[in-house]
Structure formats: structure tokens, C-alpha cells
Image 1 (spheres, one colour):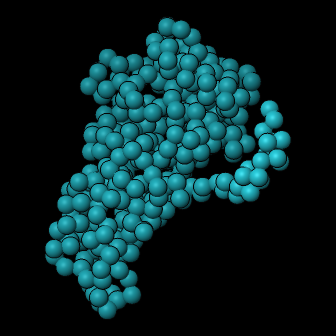
Image 2: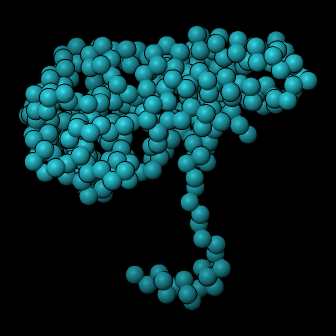
Length: 321
């Protein structure tokens, strides 16, 4: 409690420069470092673009889980842009041209979450175990509060005490009400949460669900039931179905997306843990194979480390020095 006094009397403390906040762009670039290293950008620093460098880049993109279709498109675009600018005589480096080609490929994914006029606006979140749903909900609650929206959390993972407790912590941290119950039917929790939000004039309900594998058919059917019950509680809801994907899963994220989309009709993706993987190229694979809007990306554990996806910003963080 006397830290302020120490700062005044301790010369070292008095002379220390204040710690400046790190911008999102810097955090994003740092978070994509493992993928950037995997892509092997140092091989593209030279002005020359030959078959050997293209072969090296192809292997690096595949290693970063960009997938065959997206890799082929990027290499074709790079060759064409290189040719159009006159090769080495042109103003742009191969890396700059690849950055622009990647931004163009990813642009269809750029569709920020827009909270509609309906109240309460219900957002249902799903995903496999460990993808980061509960943490993402806490960060998303903070993000929505910054937009001057009131939020209520529904703890739909009724059988895992740790999940309820974690959501309760996020609720306390953000001063947000959490509707939960121990055991029982998760669909009933959703119904109660929507009713509570309506009676309290809450803007947005964030509905957590228990993690499950797409191959667990009975649990996928439970997700469908939860969605139906939400619709009964609030006609037209859920207004958004977000699938939380772990960036470490790489190409497996595509199969998860296909399965959850078939079951729920996914309207957006939250891609987490990009800072802990060299497989960030999966964003390109999603853009090429199943371009569902990428609402948010996460590159850290901090409450502000979940932000809307911007294609050019992502491409620059991945491919710039």
C-alpha cells in the first residue's frame, strides 16, 4: 500500500521510464512469430524470384498448414504479380507481392461481428474441448462492454465445475452476471439466461457450451437441442453461432468447421492461440476451402488479446519484417 512512497524515495524507481502499452499490431506480429519463422521469410528477402525460391516457399506454406489449394493460389498470384511488374526491375519485392496476394485471399474472411438491433442479441459459442471457448467468452464480454453494450453470460457447460468457475471469474472480472447451475440440462440454463436478459434489459447474451468432438454424435445432437431451446426462448435466436477453433490444430480446423457448420449453421469463427503455433497458415486454408467469416483472432492470454480479424493487418504481421 506504500508503493507510491517507495517510488518517491527510491532513486531507481524515480528514474525508471514508464512502461508503454504495446499496440495490437505489435502484439499480433509477435504472436505470429512462430508461423512467420515457419514460412521462412529470410529466403524471400532478395529481389530475385526463381523456381528454387518458389519451391522453398511452397514447402514452407504447406508446413504452416495453408493447405494445397491456398498454397497453389498464392504461388500463382505471386508469379503473375512478379511478371506484371517486370520482375527484378519492378518496385516491389517478392515478399511485398506475397503479402498483397495473401491479403486478397483472406479478404473474404474479414467481416467484423455486428450486433443487430434485436434485444437480447444471443451469441452461441461452440467448439471442441480445449479450444478456448470459455476464455474467449470472457474476452468477448470485455470487447462488447467497450462498445457500450451490456452483457450476460450463460454457463452451458453444466457438468464441468471448472468451466463454470472459470466463467464466473470472467463474470466477476468484467462485472457481468453469470447464469449457471450445477448439473442438469444445459438447454435449461440457456432458456433461463435469455429470460433473465430480457427482464433486465441486457443487450447481449453469450452462451457457452460444453466442448465436444464432431464424432460424438449424441453430443452434437445436444448442441442442436440447445439451439432449438434458445430459439423457443427468443424467436430468431441465436443471432450468431461462433465456432471457437484452436490455431494449433492446423488443417484439422477445417474438418471441425465442416462438422459444426452442418450441425448448427456456423456464422463466424473465433481462431485462438495463434501465438503458440507455427500453423497460422490455416487462415489461408479456411479462406480458400470454406470462407466462413473470421470474426476474431487471439494471440495471447491478455483480456485485450482477442480482436477483430483484418486481412491486410494479418498479412502484414505475418510477412513484414
